[in-house]
Image (cartoon, rainbow over the protein chains, first blue to last red):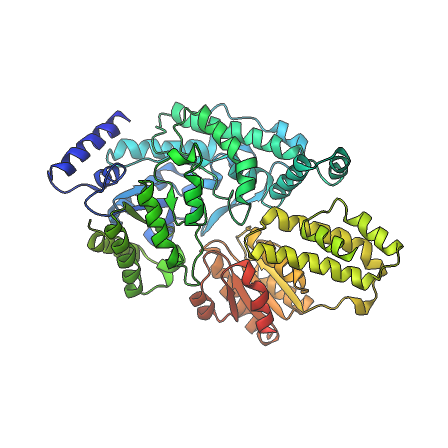
Length: 397
Length: 206
């Protein structure tokens, strides 16, 4: 962490006094404070399908070997021209933590690992799940990979992203049962008289939802603590609850029934883990800024779950309001090029898109980071690099 | 009374729907009209989902309430009372256990009066073909959330052709990584950008 702070200081001096071109990491750091020389580019290495890098790597191998993940990450570093390459493991975020608690994953060579069984079938199962005392299995693998990346590449930015209470609960309980638990709990809590409450109990157990969330909050906290005990830094880390939003639940339900658990985790972790709430519109991004916690977070503006055109492009009418919002609240805007757009769009269509968003951001003097949500089969590393080169060309402030 | 029943379904009030329907039947209300009330409630819930007012827990509530309601009404309905708009088989492709998008589409179609046969997640090519053969739907809907699993959709279409079933069923696809271009590339009949579009898409193909 001290090294990163020093890098940040040096980068700011270098930028202010024009002491040479910024490196990718320096650009990324400068953009957290002020306008950098150009828009930054970012890619989570895990978002590239392994076979697009080297067909000899598949999910079975990658789920068993730390070295295979490190080798693949090295190849990504050689082939991909983004300022920042993060998330150097291909096990899938969903497998980290939950798999050690009893969620069963199926791992096939060419398919992303997916859960096929969940350990919480009834309330009694909750007590059987033990909060991990040490990192083991996939969790340990992920920590080991991140530590080794940090050792091998001092210029790499290791950003730890782990599931938050809701996403962990989805993995432990299942994506049909947990929303039902939430509904029963909500109806019970908000029922005005006891007779209705008694009736609700005949249709479901209103106590299971808070019991699961209590457990997953403690697990979430523990997973980050284990990361620190393993030698990783929480700087830039994020508590990810990407399924706690539309269409899974309303904003009101999120703030009543999910947010308090996340805030508890954030407090318990010394407020060092970003509990940002991903939202589907610029309007809600603005509303987030009124929240006492969310309003203080940096780097939480993204189009990740904004509505898209049938071609997979974020609705263009959302860009200007989002950039205005970013300027108003002095935030950077991470613009995701979605995998299906990368795959289906021609090079000239990609150019028009990148040129457009870069022009809007540079004119608005808003820090823009362009990222790619996934590089799927049918797309290519070359196409991803094409996007990043276009940002270099058009994203100059 | 019917408006109250419709409202109960719309709001997912599964806790009271059985009592309401039992009372309505005892009071001499016609089962067919009560069924219409259930459908109206389901449709209103779907409309509110489309407008962004309702979310997954509300849809699950309405679907559960509808199911309970049908448990009371079904024995009292005659064959002519239940007029389906058509039959749709839905499933998530092999290697993909994402349920939510498919369930939302199933709900929207059910609320619009279609008979929905949900064959689940992680459905193999053979299981899709078997379901088409067995249920003889007008429409087959396939869902995928992963860029790797969606490739299975093409295999299903090829197998339907091979088995001589392709011209007997319209095929629609949806899910995060699926696009209009992919739909055209693999020869599917329709693509929905989100669950809310499912009803119009299916109606347009019938």
